[in-house]
Length: 382
Image 1 (cartoon, rainbow, N blue to C red):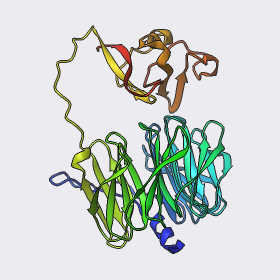
Image 2 (image 1 turned 90 degrees about the horizontal axis):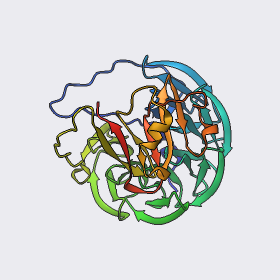
Image 3 (image 1 turned 60 degrees about the vertical axis):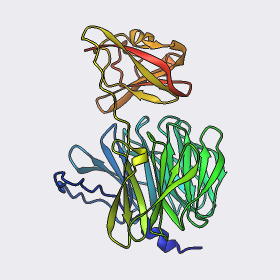
Image 4 (image 1 turned 120 degrees about the vertical axis):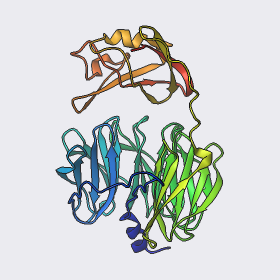
């Protein structure tokens, strides 16, 4: 078994984005003091809040992205090592490695709302914003705890490989990827059945893992072979291997550009990988519908679809709901207003945050089923 100290060193690495050739040089606009021995960071893009797990201080620093200041410090369990945010529910999950639990922070009030017991030495944590499930790697138990984000309880524990380290989720396919650091593999979990569907051999001592959901490609940092394994999520096979710096630890992906950023501990570098196979297909140029008409937007089944332009403010909820065809596929409508997520469901209107309102400016439309084009949304053209 490889040294736990070696694993601990891997936790302290953050991935920075390097500038593209010819682009303006990025600059540091702020340096924000946080807690002792910060080990992990997560961003809630919906609220523009950043969460930093401080393993030496047993707390989480909450940073406002608007002001670049710490707005709260939340005490959690012993030696937090991983952190993940669910932008749909505004809940933050922190793996407390020495107290063998996960602290659940309510992002609305910056306080721990629940503590969920998991396995021994939890390290990696990832949230699926579509299903609300949370996945935690139990390093010393060779397992992954699956938490129901609605009830904050462990619904099952999935056996994986030796000493699982990191975990990543593809919400589009509901597949979960776990790096098994001591048997040089990645376990692929089906989020619908909570079963390992396959194990993919990768390089020696895999640590960090990241997913490009739009391209269904998975990237694994192999610390002992100084390279990155690229897994094809459609076939669960190794598609390629790319050499990077010495001792790669963490991986980040920009799905908009299909560029991959790999932080290497011993070479003090970030390698930028341009994965041509994952590059987005250019959108054909089409003539937009004229203002005053309507257009049909295809919706992806099984996810919450972002909708950039919808009906005007104060449009009745019923009008917007009826614009989803077929209507039985509609699961919920969401908006983000005043720093709070608000939603409405046709099946459970009494549970809605909008029971006192009769209108909704839609931001996300969630539909059932799976795959592209299971429903459409008719909206006016501005």
